Image (cartoon, rainbow, N blue to C red; front, side, top):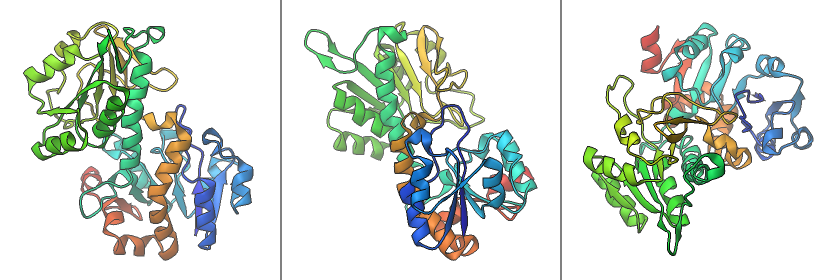
Length: 359
């Protein structure tokens, strides 16, 4: 199979769909890999490194999309990239079509087969291609938040940690999933006082058992308001339903935070739980001030550490990519329930319920 790796085009998105080692594994299995010129440079992988393991370097994105039997990339295609879609093509990447109906329609219009990273689901319910990026996002949320709390970045001048005489900075985390867990791990490692708000009783008990020092509580409004008001850093790792009218963290709660405190809203896409996350931001323009609080609402946080992220993502995706290439897309989907769960459309036929509902 001929697999194409295009250059990512979103703002400061330097991850890449395959590293040289991944290309080597695909080549050893008898496949051909077409890597767009410069695709790996942002993550520290040169075109020469790709050539050395058997890749062909494509001159541009159009050549990559037109010639590949399967395109593997990281971020969901942009509207400009949809113009490059070949009829009958296949894509394996993040898609987030729940907030991009135009993208789902483009897949259908071009009779494509699309498997979405974030929907690949194991029998135990785990999302193996979402987890590695969620871990990195949770970790980096605290690292970035600690930087933004510095006065040179507009913060209130608080260190995330503990120093004799200064006490411990408080970190509040919304959601006890993978993002929340790794944010908690990182904040604890820095010496912060950490409170995680999580709905599930069993998960709260698990977090307190596995992370001694973490306080895991139910997100009841009064308790939430009290902790948020004290927190120097608030990390959101939870989402709410698209049609929900209420937010977990209200504007009034944010208003009670001290000026220069920081909110890192990791899951502002598809929709965040924080009322004051009024817009998404980018790595080029990462923050805005709302109610005196610094807000960081960058959707692709792992892109700030592209080499680590590319390696971690490929570790999770490569076995699935090899299966798709080795036995063919149709058979791989038929034999692997995890891949089947990620299938949005097959040869232009909507498969996922939400995609079918759009037709």
